Image (cartoon, rainbow, N blue to C red; front, side, top):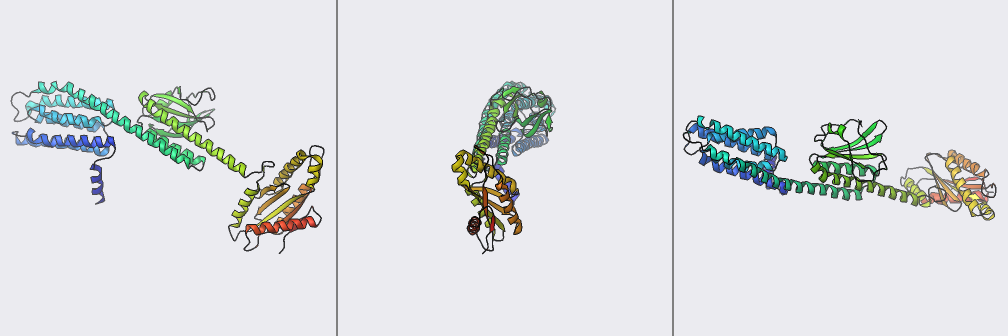
Length: 491
């Protein structure tokens, strides 16, 4: 039942202009055949009438096959030419077959290339000539075959084919242009919500495939120039098969010597790999170091498809730059400008993420420099800034790779410790104190400061704010105990 519904939908009037034109021309051809058969077999010998009806029915099946498959294959063209020839041989007068030939030409013109359409017309004419040579051999055919009148319409067949093909080419070009525009529009819409470079690359690749699919004969390959050749990354369009991992013999322009406009290159090695050899151009990939987009196509196709692929490349490269800029801004918003450590906002966010799991265990160490104001007032702000940068570097070296070290502001620092507990955290805090006790070279001579560290372990049911408060209490306890030491919060 579902298959029957699919068949009905297939023969329903399409919405797209090209498909609607094909549907209309196919129906006209089938209707012409149905109207012609009764007149063509009237008065004919029974066997001749049966054969003529069968030839016409088979011709209709060829047309139906072409419409259903959306393809114009050479085997179908040969079959159509042979069946038209058979209809000429079996019909009296044979000029009636022109009622099949002309609708068939119009229908065939909306498929394939102009060269193939011309070949089809030539085959049909050859079939008609062959049918005329057999006309006198068919039982019931006496007298003149009026072949001269039939052959006199041959120039009109070619003129009709040319006109139909011109119309079909305009329709196909319009449809292909709309498909390319749709692909670019969808790419632009998708890039607005792209979250990372990988998604940008994936969307750009889908758009390139869509553009090449809408432009028969267009082939593209994204490569990276290497000493041994051009390494292939992505391909789309008219290729005979998978490309080798490294393309040799492809001479790319000198990077930096050309702008981002397409530059013609020698695509000799690529012609053998492409389904339809043609002119080749190279476009620099702005977001990929040593990256190039190679595009090849016949002249007419190149004029239509290359700008669309260039737009895909430009849009995706711009999206990557925007992502990098947003990422840099986001990172800057989470980073302390002076020390390069995470800032208070980034530390708070990480702490809240850690506390989101009620079962998670972590610790917070608050680090407050001792006597920093003395250095800052006595040696100047430049010395104070240099001291803070040195402190930040020592903290980075003292903590583990998975720990988060942040500057909260002024001379206050904090460390979020995961995966350690009890004495191990206390030992880590002790190493921080030892590292910060060493003299620091600053403008005006070396200075020495200490650090008071307060440690708080997350207890059952405690949230991030409570842990921070406990670490703050422990830090002030360390200062009150004489500075330059560690205190652990105890309830």
